[in-house]
Amino acid sequence: MASLQQKSLIATAAIFCCRFTGLLREITYTALFGATGALDAFLTAFRVPNMLRDMFAEGALSQSFTSMMSKEEQTNGPDAAWNLAHRVVSQVASLMIAIVAAGVLLAGFCMQILYPERAVLQTELSESAAALAPRQEVAAEYRGLVRGEDGLQKACLVLDAPLSGLSEQSSVRVDSLSSLHCGERVKLTTLRSGQGKETLRVEPRTFPDLAVDLCRIMWPFILLASLSALSMGALNVFGIFGLPNLASAAFNLTTIAVGIALGWCIDPSFGPDALYGFGIAVLCGGAAQIGVQLPKLRKFGYRPHWDIGLTWKRGRLHFTDPRVRAVWALMIPGAIAAGITQLNVFINTSFALYLPAGAVSALSCAFHLWQLPVALFGVAVGMVVLPTVSRLSLTSEGSGEIPIRLAEALRFVAFFALPSAILLGLWGEEIVSIFFQRGRFNAQASELCGHVLSAYSLGLLGYAGMKVLQPVFMALEKPWAPAGLALVAFAISLALNYTFVRILGLGATWLALTTAFITTLNFLFFFFYLRHLLGGMAGGILLGGLVRIAGAGLILAVFCRLVQFYFFEGFTAWDFWVRFGMMALAGMGAGVVYVVSSLVLRVPELTTLFGKMRGRLSR
Figure 1 (spheres, rainbow, N blue to C red):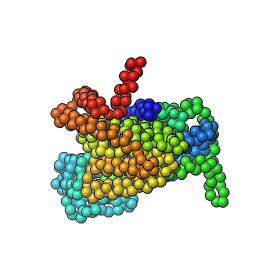
Figure 2 (figure 1 turned 90 degrees about the vertical axis):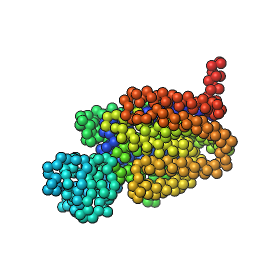
Figure 3 (figure 1 turned 180 degrees about the vertical axis):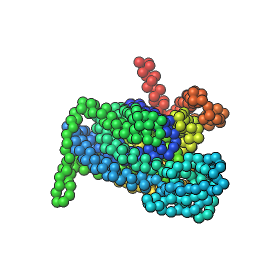
Figure 4 (figure 1 turned 135 degrees about the horizontal axis):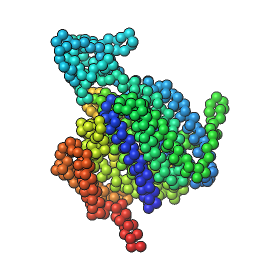
């Protein structure tokens, strides 16, 4: 376990750099563009290729490839492993080129599905309205919905006063007009929070068009991300876990630098058009992510070689290498199982587009903060566990050790994930304000994003645990059962999201709550099914440690709630450095409370760490 902890900490340090620079990227977006419809369009456009990257490239494809390559390297040596890599890389590149071409062609269709249908406003002023000053909210009489000669639907209204921000491209959602009758009185508003049956929120019609353009620009990112994920998997086989995650940091830093430079060249005031520069920067970042890994790959013997590994016989394609077929056989159900959370986030985006502007941005910012501890511990441990379990599964003696390794890994992850969940849940708004509240991202946006983050935090333990357990199914070559269970969880998620947003009219917080519930449910599915496959999960090792960790977490939660009640009143209105200083002091206090509580309760992970430190000092 010492080796597992050591490698996990190395991966954790590298992933921290990746996630920290990812937060810097999100901070750059929100500071320049705020929680607005323009940034919603960019994030929505990026969500499609990014979801495919999470599901296939950095999820199932990387894991299935790492599992098979680990076994091949263990059995037949490095040369055989690299031959397998050549065929997989060639096939993946060919498939992704086809997906990129299809994505560019279908980008308009994808955005049309995601964005609610809009009707252009056709307005006129009442006789008494001409002398009034423009307002952000005015009363109006609805005159019906017509389709113009250009094919666009137009909502006809007579305004009682001029509406501030109204233009020829202003629009309202068609679904918001479905319950209105001709002659009915409504309110028109350009305020971000405007919603409800009797209030029509006016939006710029250009944002869906912007999303289509940006989606076409960023689609090739899935090709670059897939090749980067295969590079990561190959390096993991040879025990290299730090560099592959630092490659993601290279992506983030390149995206920030190139995006700011190109965005400023396009629009120095960083209006919506500047997002085209950030779209191009995403592709530059994807290329940088591959480039930083190539020297290390060459050191371990990789030489680029095209070998498609397919033949055409009797009217169908056949694999010339059964090992490559095994990679794809694992990848397809693995993509379903691993991608449920990402697919749920994607569906959340489509539902969030029915909410006031900024909901997509709030979900994105909160999700990045939520993913930080998951990536630091859940992903890092899962990354190390995969090749280890793959090798142990080759022998009957090794298979008996798998439950012990998994119990220790889950306990190790819980030790870090539980305090993270408590801090994000209780101090969500305050944490968001530290990271994002600057530029055009104001206190109101911090409040919305903070509530979303608190809802996400309820599923952090389940999400981190799922990241540890899901790769084990790849190693055991048992991917279909968790895929089926994940599909059930996704169906539940879809039903809950539709109920919360389209029927009950609830906000983005409930979308995040659904994600938290589904990830926890998914983890429980994975845990009990894996327990069935392995004949147990070393309950004695797992349960005792978890009870002690929960006790330390309860003490931490009480401390955090008291600090929030007595010291955080009006936090988002303070100057940044005051907020930063107060949060730093509170964070250090929370750390001390958790460590001392863990020592008193004899949490195994902490006592082991202190024991090693004392041993080194005595030597």
